Length: 428
Ligand SMILES: Cc1cc2nc3c(=O)[nH]c(=O)nc-3n(C[C@H](O)[C@H](O)[C@H](O)COP(=O)(O)OP(=O)(O)OC[C@H]3O[C@@H](n4cnc5c(N)ncnc54)[C@H](O)[C@@H]3O)c2cc1C
Picture (tube, rainbow, N blue to C red):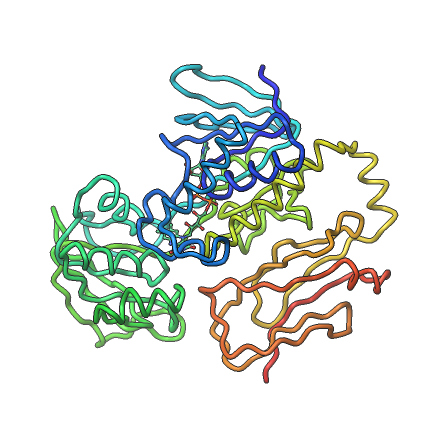
């Protein structure tokens, strides 16, 4: 058995930023475990620019953004193992992993940071009728094939789903000489960032068909075409609205799912809305000393927010091992002070974190959330029990863009009996 203070699962932007922050906050023995052949996570295949505007006030490509953190990890002499797959984590933080050199091995960690990212939803989750011909890819797989492996998956393309990866791949395939005929989206709004709709579709004249879905895939060996139909408010295809498209490739960009098999296996409580762990103000899960950050916690739109959130998880994990408190101590202290629950109403789907222990509240806490639909000219409001303490006007909010508010310790300290913080959307 090997021993480390902090073991980080995943060497993507979340794992890297968490490791750097943990080291800078006093943690000596840190190990990052990454199953891929290099650090950087999904950023390695995102060769477009648009990363780092918040963190570095520069427009970087994905690999450039990752490199900034990889350099810091190396300068700070943080240990990492590549080609190393974590198979299991026990509730008492024994990490079981495997690689070619060491075979199966175990590590006892004092704290664990979950940073495994997310995966794409596949065709199987959609129930599209038709055979299973070649030529159907998830947008992320196509991105990897084009940007890393050097293959063009097809020449005549239809994209289902207008999440950011689908939008970015519409532009990428066009730049590589393919003809992207249409991007179809089931919902009446796009799931991607506004800037990606403009830069990846509008600039290239690619139509976006909202409230449309693929109802049939033609071709036995290879995709030969698809049928698109308009859908009603319940997402059901409207008969008579079918349109045929000839194509050899269908790309699916129909959602991301946090990669939480390990978290579930170790007994971490998951939030059914985000499919990520439920966390408190310290980004600590229901298991003491187990923290989560990045896309494994909830799917982010911008990597800058991943890095910011992961740095907080790293600091908190360092604090946890440097000032290690026993469960009894923690429970005693929590009993002395109320835990404040964060709840959502009217259009807001979830918050991260979902509870705040005043004892551990930092000077300033970022609460991130997403809305469930498109709301124009609305207010984002925050209530402390019955009292409204924030009423921020927004011209438009949409599910594709993550929102945030900041709470301060000083603000909360004025309400010693506070039990519930509620976030909601209110009409203007
Ligand atoms: C196609 C695409 C385009 C994007 N475009 C932009 C953009 O333009 N601008 C922007 O700001 N953001 C963009 N993003 C978002 C940004 O890339 C992500 O938010 C960010 O990469 C998430 O970081 P992460 O570390 O949580 O996850 P990831 O980057 O997915 O890293 C997770 C890591 O964990 C590893 N891992 C998982 N399970 C295990 C295990 N069991 N054992 C060992 N290792 C494991 C994985 O191999 C991976 O390296 C884009 C994302 C995608 C997918």
